[in-house]
Image (cartoon, rainbow, N blue to C red; front, side, top):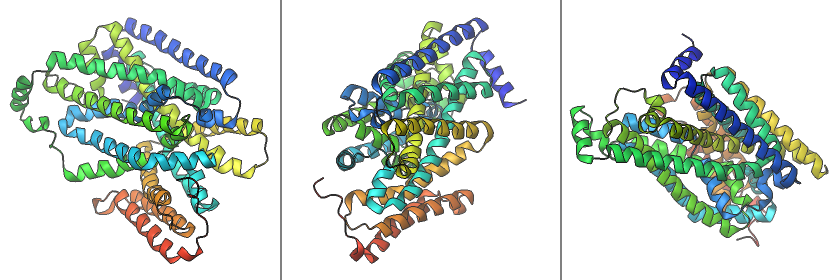
Length: 492
């Protein structure tokens, strides 16, 4: 049986033919509304390169909070956290905690410098920062890292949307991928980041309300802790109700991969620069990371309470979200929850889309057409969206190693960019030679270690990041006398 046939059979089990028709109509209307909104933003709000790529640097607090939440809580969080919680229990809260910890560190120590340096030099991408700090040669390793990670994860979002369409209305995975590709490409091509931010305000509201509603209902039905402990004990799984049921090594992997990734997420830096002022960026981010953490708690709690509180132990863990909404809601509310899931995936997908396409126009094309008109650069920004879309859909359609590719990209981002970015923000003695060496060494080691299959069962980040860190320190100290510029004068 092919993968498409397998998914089709599962969709028949989840919904009746009549329900699938209703869901199909609603999904089509939803897609049309998204596209229409992007057209409106394009013709009324986008007049410049900054409008398209950093939302005109004028985003207010409310949409900023929700676009932060929309990019933080995607399909992998909603579906992945719930599936892992259902299978492995309360210990999965540490994955959520690792993201919160890095978010708090960012809020306390990074936002101010990222925002102020970006505001002074009108930055659009991380490549702008690394080029300013370490020279134009730093753009290439930065772009490679960003493109590999974000094109792959964008392709994954195409697959995620296709899976939703498959399980709800019975479309084949291939057709679903093509539909999601066309929709996201069209709406991002016309609307840019400004459209993404305002749609995230809608998506963030829907996904937040839907997540908490599901958790409250599941908790109401199966929230007797005594009965949960008794049932878990009868299954021999009592330890899964403990938050400490997770290995230290697993927590460290979470912190240094998913957590470390948060420090060098281009979509996050872009939103710091898109805020209308520094205070808006700080307050919006603080509220967003706390709200995202609570959403993570609700998602993980839903998975655990579904298994042990509602005693639903015989379901496919990959379908736990669909089984949950089907078990606790009547069909009209199921429709709303499917839309909430779509909103969750799309809010991440178009953000990753913009992060990758902005790197192409800003770090590859724009430096080579310095005297081009605003209209021409804006048009090239749209062409960059198409370029990213083609790469991403090809990955989604033809590369079964898509997840592996994303893991490589994440390892490259953390191993190659984390040390140069952090040292570049805080250590004035970091030199151009040190930064460039650290980037290429981290990139190369991360890729080689991943392709070699994790020798000695060591994750690439635990090799690439230390070497990158050591390189920037040693080489910078050796070339310190050659460093002549100070980008922080009159900024901090």
